[in-house]
Image (cartoon, rainbow, N blue to C red; front, side, top):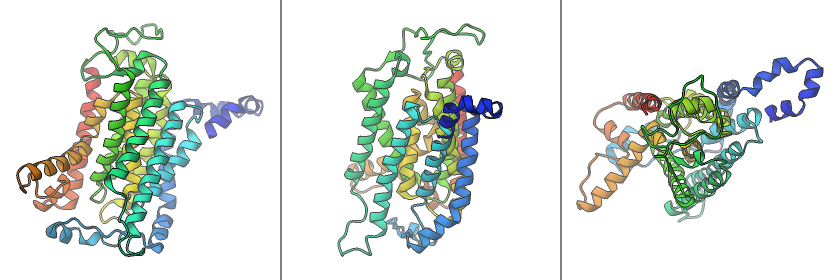
Length: 394
């Protein structure tokens, strides 16, 4: 909004001598870094008030892990307010409205993903937290299939919109590891759009594109939700992942960088740097209140939209494979649950892990909560570094 107002009133600002000071806002890089700071400050300024409001509303967590040892280890969490995701998503929303180009198609779609999944997660949280106050037998949250239906629904809609909006085959390419999207180029080469594609590049047809995008958005949304089980675990990992997506969005939207690194160029995607920056800052601010011992949990209100946004960025900039590495901690968490369930059924009741998701397995093995969280953060940093470094290996 702020950016669009400046763009609209450019002539008037020039006549007042203010244009030279404000034209820096035309640089996506500046607005992305500003978004980190603005969203961080919003969370910091409103954090205490939001937590106090949640406490007054008695929106507290009463975790049940269906494991006696784990219930004892995590007993201190009882009563801690949840639904803190309204703080994160609110900060992202306000920051994006202020600093992002609202005329950009991808920004509009990101807003839809944010609002859709925030509402879904908030409704699920509210049903869980108010079940005891409602009539006996009231449901505790949405059923799994209901939640998945809405996740797949938004995944399908935005994937279809992304596919139809793409202006060149580059934005439909399946970007595989170590594969060159374009022939090698030098930084001083003349840039001529559209780029000539490498003959080996696979251009996805509409059906395949939409299926991959739908499954990734729904899957990553659930993966982050499952990871949100320890103080600071999902928040810190999301900071690392969203920072990596900021870098990838800049590369995908900058023709010279995309040509030099031989990754798909997607016109207009650079604006998602601002959205990813807002996500980074909001998660950083939330960590201030969420590190152990946590004052608030994000709940489904935060985890569902943040995971969905991470996947949405990847679908736009054609990095579906790389986001699985960047979000490797999330994939490890949801994978541990899937393996545990499948093996339990096939083996007649045996388990691979002491408890799933896997962060609880290590907690039960004797790692402290701090050790689990910090070590998973370190894994996330290493995976993000490997993912970014892999861009040069083509």
